[in-house]
Image (cartoon, each protein chain N blue to C red):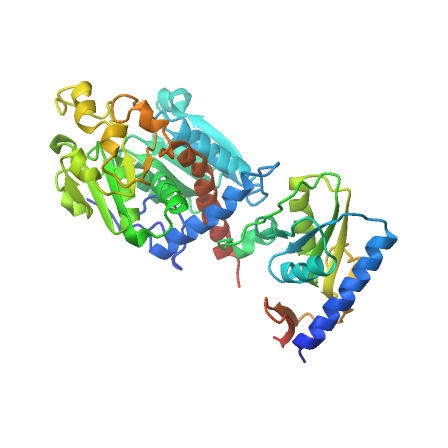
Length: 168
Length: 326
């Protein structure tokens, strides 16, 4: 049961609409957008364009901040983080594809704070699959799913984004 | 005798120690360079630190004086959030008669994770790697005339920044090949990465006994050796290692083999000039070249931090990964 490209595009569209509303409600003007490599960056690319954000898109690769480094080892990071702006005092929109344990977001927040002190961070996730292990929640969510720990969901891309499910 | 075969790689072919570039595949070398690329980006941030090696302890054991190697190893470990100790062997228990192995075992008992070794004897890092406890990894920061593997990686990393396609490159290594651990590591690494032509340029007295065995073309004339090259890698004249009358005088060495803008004219117009440091200005390289537009010498220093971060994190990450069941 995959969410095919057409449906994923519809999901992205509604995510963009909800994010626009949310930013307006919170009066967060001129936000910076940062996507988490790789899936989050693809979603962020779409949102960045849809919301016509002036500043270039930032990409975080949280490999150096993972808490399972000593278990999984280091793999060469071919795409390093690239935040082509100053973060101090700015409103940040952090984007990921799938929100699961919350550990990726913990790592991403740590890395963001090594670049500077943002005024705020808003978390956007295309899918929230549950299974949190840390006190993290998304501010804007495309779709909420309840998956068992054995099920996997993965965003494939970058052309024709598609959410794929797998049992293992 | 040579002793049992000892490998710096673990069973799965990942780095367990980092002792030499010998036997490292093109794939492993490229992995290190790619990883260094992402650490280079960390060095440009406001906070130049990542938490990868939090809680690990790295000990720099330098039996030979060094400034840039010691400080870049120290900075690399610190930027990975490891704790670092620099042990000055001149002021340590070694002068009270403690043996090298006793010093090592004492440090092992303090639950350190990595030793970085710089030693005047060839093979010192191998010896230490063979004799340390299994929880310690050893990095070679230069051993005698044998190897200086991280410097060689810094050099190829620097070349890659300027000239990414190695298959077309002509590289000349110039100077004191016989006494240089850097040259040996450089030649091996350049060849493993598929550089088209590696040249060594030196007077006969500063060539090793069988220079062709290194896999490089030998030139006795600087002018011929530099013709049409893309990269010139100068070596420091190792005055402290030269014994006996190998050279008539430093002045004459400079006249024949010292790099000047004029002599560099036969190289390609976009050739880059490298030197692992420290420089003997006016001996192997003139200031007009060292500080000139084609010099990438200071870039080599910056790259030293990223390369050492890459190797340290690859070793310490992998090692613990191997220990985890499943």
